[in-house]
Image (cartoon, rainbow, N blue to C red; front, side, top):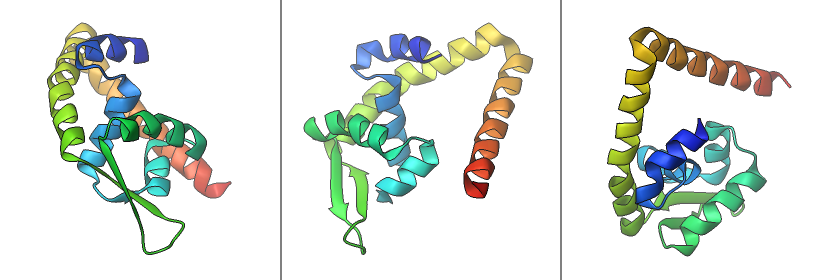
Length: 127
């Protein structure tokens, strides 16, 4: 699945992991890095490594939170422009995948993804 989205996003210069981070930060500005890690189910080391190129490109702003250990993340204007540039490629990929799967399989895929995320959250909270 990642290869499919990576190929679709290639003209934008982003990989699906980077696009997902830009999208999450668009939808949840000023989210803490810990919250972003939990939201996306990514361990903190992997998240830090994936955020590094976004920081280097000037697409990401980090500010200290109320707790000195907390880092709050948001997109810069350049990061927002990059997200908006990549968004049509992602939307086209979504439409193509939905068309290839058909409505029933597409809906089943989305439902399964939601149930999987819920199960992972429940498991993590009970561990």
